[in-house]
Length: 254
Ligand SMILES: C[S@@+](CC[C@H](N)C(=O)[O-])C[C@H]1O[C@@H](n2cnc3c(N)ncnc32)[C@H](O)[C@@H]1O
Image 1 (tube, rainbow, N blue to C red):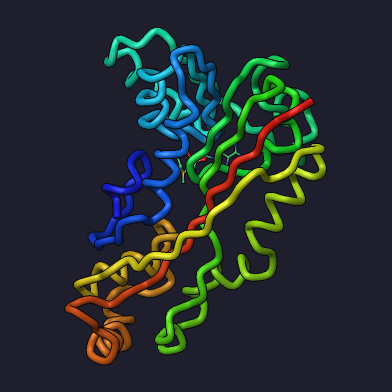
Image 2 (cartoon, protein in one colour):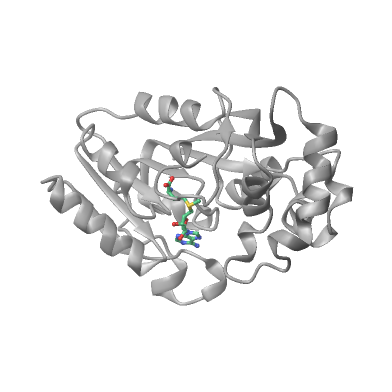
């Protein structure tokens, strides 16, 4: 998995199919880059993608709310001798209600392109201000994926994230945020691919990952149901979890 999600490494080994949305996102993103493009990367994390984009355009700014990521990103750009990228600590969450925290950290009419690979959506309320007329927004988001058929063999706590996501679809969420900013989706695509796990321990690592350092169950506590899942649901040597991704573009016209 980590090889498809550079910059955000996951502590398990698995395989994920081709045409998973990640590659389509890169394709669409690169179509929008020219030597004169000035771009913004929302939720840039440690800047891996930002630095790559910098080699294909005039200038790129990356922002993330995690300071440690921004320090790593700056180091990465320096090591690559790139002088056309800047990194800023920021979070445009409108709930913070302070000017410095609730706005996209950039001046009006700055960017030809705003992009985000699995970053937040909460910048959308202010994005129209920083994009030039005729500019684009391109974003990839995880989308709700129904739990696998064997999910009921595990404690329900482990699927909380999915259940929460089900109440409000990603397409509706993006469309509503854009509408509030007087913008609309220009085009969108859904992708649905399997992630394949070959070992019970790898599936366990996936299942408890969002609990960070406090997994509610040890591997030994889940060993029996996970081994049963491997016994009853293995196809071609692996147990599958499906993933959906949502890719969308918006054209900013004023
Ligand atoms: C799944 S990671 C993706 C990182 C990067 N875009 C990439 O593709 O490697 C999501 C990133 O968004 C950042 N993020 C989440 N919410 C944010 C917010 N409200 N403002 C700024 N950054 C945010 C996180 O800190 C994290 O680095």
